[in-house]
Image (cartoon, rainbow, N blue to C red; front, side, top):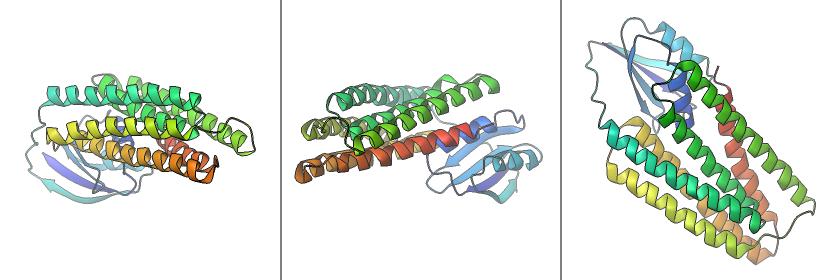
Length: 263
């Protein structure tokens, strides 16, 4: 068994991990993939030559290069998969519930920050769903699921951008800052619970570590929406809400484009 290590410069969230996993799905000599998103590295355990693996990863345009290849390694222990799947289901459900709550209250309170945050939650849910539902499926099936996910995210992000422009030129109601702050606090609590469950698992598996990073980023977004709500109150302006909306829509669109680059 060989272990080839890659440095992947642009691998900074679970979306890239899922793209790489799906891209490498059809290569039969791969035994195991070990991702380290914080360090932007991927260890591929495989038999034979790594040329096809290197070429396939390169087609994603994530800035990849080989760091080392070691021969005679032992395949690592893969961990307790059933308990990890159960935990990912819990985090997925929390994200989906938060998505429904935020997008509903976002429209009611006329807050683009809440609507954008809800779409970020939806993007997370789609990534987790892709990881859970596509297990055991064919490469073609996984590709179709990913494409659908990417197009849906991109369509929602574009719709959000259009709505921000419409509101920026004076159309639409003034956002209700109290609702923005209260719902974002609920989302913050939900994401904190997800983070607690992930940390409590003490799993070193790559997809669990990736989920940990994803959830941590969500907490930052929640704080951003809360701050925008405070600024709406202090400035009596809708601009802070529109700014946070644009920033989060951009994150969602970026994730969608990465998924759609998968061939």
